[in-house]
Image 1 (tube, rainbow, N blue to C red):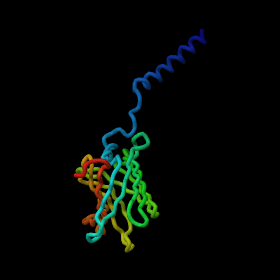
Image 2 (tube, one colour; image 1 turned 60 degrees about the vertical axis):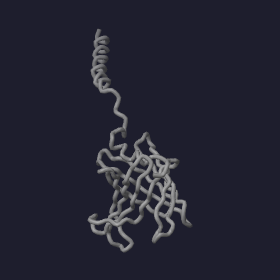
Image 3 (cartoon, rainbow, N blue to C red; image 1 turned 180 degrees about the vertical axis):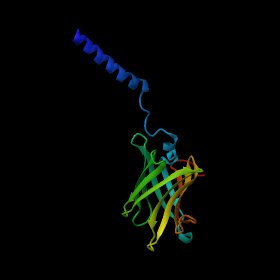
Image 4 (cartoon, rainbow, N blue to C red; image 1 turned 45 degrees about the vertical axis):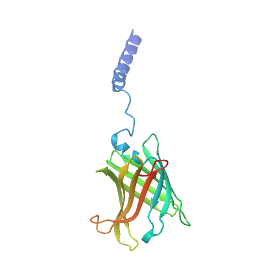
Amino acid sequence: MRQTLRRTITILIGLTLAVPALAQGPAPAPCTGPEHHQLDFWVGEWDLTWPGPQGKPGGTATNRVEKIFDGCVVQENFTGTSGPHPLLGRSLSAYSARDHVWKQTWVDNQGAYLDFTGEFKDGEMRLSRHGVGPDGKPRLARMVFTNIKPDSFDWRWEFSADDGKTWSVAWPIHYQRKGAPKG
């Protein structure tokens, strides 16, 4: 009888612990909130163009952007197609739900490693970082994704030497989705 009573108590305790866990249902899939989709416009195959200095021909590149790791990470694969040493670069971007910001890391074949944080606000994605200019003085750098449409957008690399009061555009790039009519 004691053995049966012990088994019954053990089963009841097990059920008491299991029922709340079953009632909760499966955990929500990660990276499904709206913030995690703010860079979805960037996903795809792109042709890039930018103006050259003082009316000279500009540069070109391609960019393949995809979501990886169950949609939690946006991976960029940049391939420059002009110049004697075309720029090759990769970035990984992810939304940090804990910090409520986007984070991006960029590396390239010129030895650069850059890390950015930012947000999507007022129809633009802005990612920035603190750095040091060629003159050795501190400056801010940022990239801005703007004029976002389904098949095109503009991207700017900008610098500020006055803590973000004013910005200078160093590299404007126009993105056009491969195969989409230009417009």
